[in-house]
Image 1 (tube, rainbow, N blue to C red):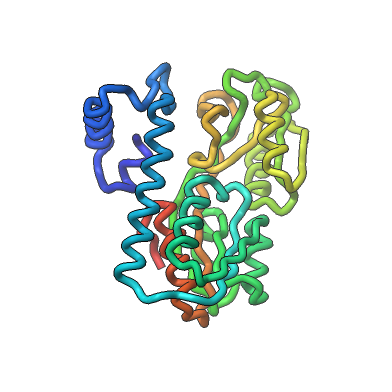
Image 2: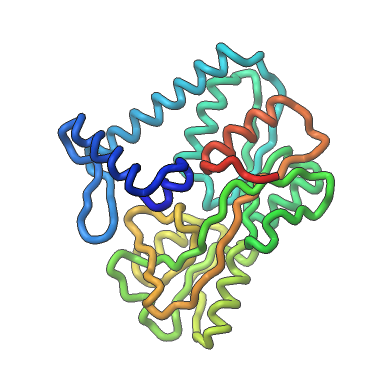
Length: 275
């Protein structure tokens, strides 16, 4: 509720009332409110699935009726941790709306994607960076839009004990991960001893080590899977800085297909952004 409020330009109370009204209309709860966290009920999961399909159909119909036909190719780069269901649904809706556009997707670390767009190998890319570097493109030839600022949080197994171990077992994606230098710096500043349990390019394997409670990791708050737990600030782990999700676009790329995809991607992260 707290995260949704600024994105929808409403108060948290207004959103809570809307959810309650929805539950009253359906005469069934869509959220399980046990303890301090909200989880979707089975009915809520069904509602979410159908609602996404309705919104995608709405976007497709609107695009077909109001915009000219688009064609061409768009090369799009996405960090591993941002390739979630919402972005996948947006890409599917884009494909349905503009079947003549060929979208090529590249997943990688933010540093790799930034380098790829500099070399002209990508037209559009999502790049994660510390807020202090949020809008500092390496070359003036690129447009940079900050779509969202999100806190980096510690993540562990639900009810797990890995965070209590010494040295702290940490699972990281790989050496090129945008989060890694700041995680290491925070641990060193606290004087915390730690060890790497797993380090690879495989996000799913990192997630598996955390689920098994053999390590903790750090991700952006909104990307944390619902079966894992955001570790509370008072558990002794060092505070981590916020990160910006930036959309890089080649300045010389005036293709409508690229602009349309950029707009769809910006919509996923729920902010008008700032140039």
